Amino acid sequence: QVQLVESGGGLVQAGGSLRLSCAASGRTFSNYAMGWFRQAPGKEREFVASITWSVGSTYYADSVKGRFAISRDKAKNTMYLEMNSLKPEDTAVYYCAQRKITTTSYDYWGQGTQVTVSS
Image (tube, rainbow, N blue to C red; front, side, top):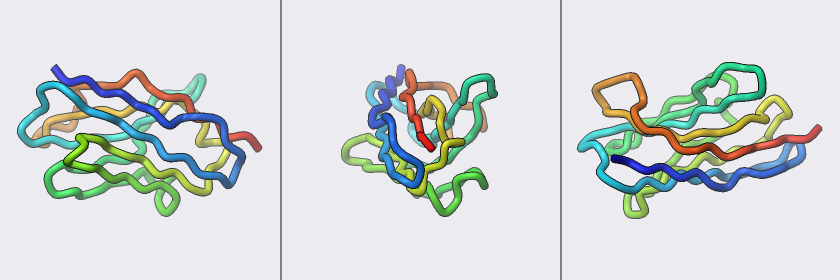
């Protein structure tokens, strides 16, 4: 079983920055990827970014390219999402998740952290 705990959310003005963290513990897959998703009120959950743990390959949704950066610290078993130039439409609950590298569906999810961007 894998436990994922997000932190770093909060209230920020448009144009500001936030850094989210996702700490992983427990029994992880031998080869996996982790990702960030978000869900705004009344909307479906959407993909934000992902990273392969071993190699560090990154992928981003078009809506955040050039503004967000995903990274990981293997020694700390922690993934990060650096969010810059935040917009009100980035307001959502942000979730981290983990999947096997060989699949596209995510098996483990964190509880989420709220990000609110005021205009």
